[in-house]
Length: 501
Image 1 (cartoon, rainbow, N blue to C red):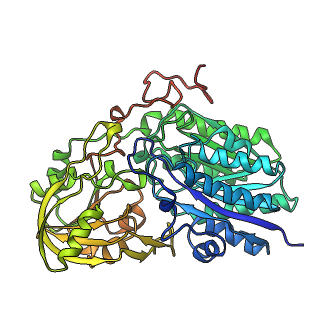
Image 2: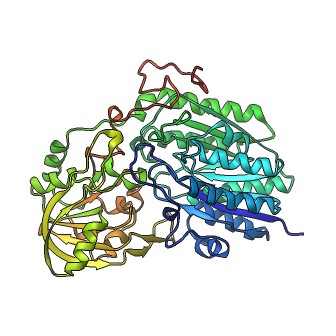
Image 3: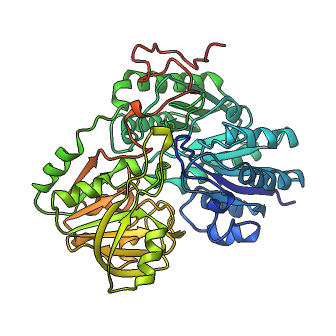
């Protein structure tokens, strides 16, 4: 008889300092995919869900796809949204299945729980105590005891930008299938170190994450079924935020534990390398102005929507205009009010608008500051294009109604929905050829590399304004376990440290 597999996605990276709301509508465009629409939309795509679906298909399983929710990072997930997705998955499990495949993130904080994934997995386990559950997780997952206790197989991405989402899903699914067939007995071990690592130090081409991933791959080559290094998501203020490692061995707990401890010890040895240090914005832009050739990528990383930023702070754009950089394309400012005004004026019209700065950021004590800009409207589009880079290949990117404002020296893409630029289609879909620009200003941290690194002559982080800043002094951490480095510089190496009661 065919095995019945429940295959679903529930992904969100929650920035608990972000003012951007996360209702159910944020998890699907134009609506949350459920049932057969999940299979239609994600089969054959470069996603964890795509990898899991391929494994289930290859094994001839009877596939049930209750829901695929994937929202751009933002603030706490709405209680209704969280319940809707969890209920859909749990109802399908309750109807009966032989295995559950899940594409999760690992840093979801909802209004009703600080540990969204752990809560979902615990609910599934209560319904089906012996159900095999395999899941792929984001490299920025904050792993918890509930996640480990209620999951059979857990595999994380090994790249940032996440160009191996499909491979992580396939990896988790393949291990689970081998276990179902009685070929192996997966045993997982996990551990933490008290490091609140910063996202800008987690690129797989950077130290210390790159060497850590190399070590994890070596552990797999030496016999582990899987080894995953999770940098964690530092802007999710809850107890278990931070760096962790998960290893899986075949019926050998000692092997898994030894590998896990080796990786964690190396992560601690490199603890200073997990911190990002920046220079004043004016100095950065002044240096960039002296660079010849291009495109020069300028990263407005403090306002990255894919880490929960409002994507409408204007400090970097203002500095570029004031220092008179030329031949610049910006992606992008999320300002649906400005887009509506440009749409009403029409392509070819001259317009003066107050751009950006519509959203206050109370958790870091900053009000939104619009920037008055004059220019010509060059384009208005529906904002849709198909992603071609490996990260999410084949899925549709929806920027919402989108316009281009041209000041003469600077072309600014203004979108209606939060969108991080990692595929060149964000420019090309609105008539801008990024390879022909001297400067590209991207509201991104590391994901831009998926599409833009290949065309960039230089890549320069810019210390702008926003709730994805790498300046820890802006954030009031209340829930994360303490002590933790670097919030507590003298923090000792404490394996799986628990906050004192």
